[in-house]
Image 1: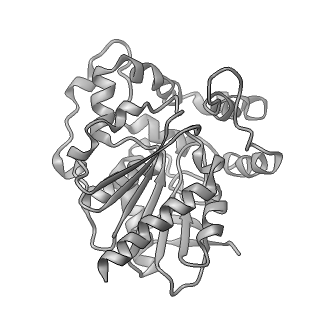
Image 2 (image 1 turned 90 degrees about the vertical axis):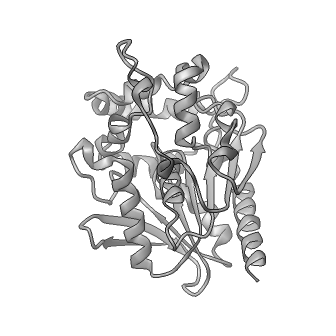
Length: 305
């Protein structure tokens, strides 16, 4: 059974979260992306909940969690501090931090900081900041694929996304969910799942959009070579925990070249490519995702013996 909780953390931010599994089992923490919510992990954590304690928070800016108005409140360091505070509240080492999309930006930051509580990292279609910066600087295909970030950074994006029962929001799923590009995809987007998304989006989109507004990693606007000045120190890029990357190959927003050279920044790296899957692979193949997570965590447990 999945339960819902809300906790005010020591630094003043409130996070709501979904949880299942025995309290005395190894802890897995799941971070969602845009335009999602903690509920996207329900099928995955239901499959893992007999063997692990699974916790999936709504990130800052989403659903019942705190949603500060200031754009500056959504820097990666602030988001990472939320998760560290939540883990401190849960009072258990994390056997694996699992993250998709924008949740991965938070998870990469935590992996680089290598907090003592984090044992393993699982990333699902979320670009490492160093390879993403490289591709945005040099690869026209990735620049074009990421052009939508400019729209989401607009100050008037929220009313346009809300209009006509979130018409543009559904297009993120159908447009990015087609395997071959010949027809709209997202067959997983049932009426019941749409209602879950409406519950999240109905509490406001501005916080979620602030992730895009504050990020320096997006295509340069107005012809300015802003990206050329971006530098990422090793403290933000070198991940010091064993990491599994699950990559859906039909992701049209995040191209496979983002995996090139990743082992330079993540020495303890395993990569599993998932054919016939899109950016929304968590919805599309929850059993596969759960199986890969369990196998990776069990490998770590065996090595620790």
